[in-house]
Length: 115
Image 1 (cartoon, rainbow, N blue to C red):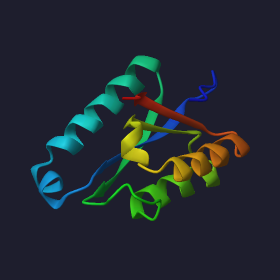
Image 2: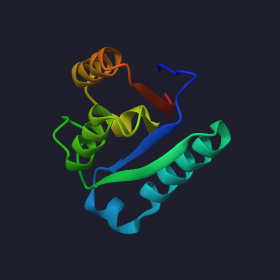
Image 3: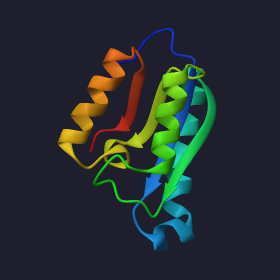
């Protein structure tokens, strides 16, 4: 979204909705792989990838997402990378709230696939 040239340290965020997806690991693994590959390609330091397993994207009340936002707010990382926008949020209202939060905090949000 808002890609700054000084972006270096980022946190990855992955999510699957169902327990079955979480236990298979496939959805999580493919999301992690995409994030790791893009960070390597762009020369970004991926500090960690946080995961919400079996959590719906219907709201922002998810433990790993909250942890990622806390890391961004406290400063050790300057960007959040997700493999797909729908892994971050399925709500347009919540996405608008996040976008405003990223803009006001001068942080970067990168969604690798907008579809």
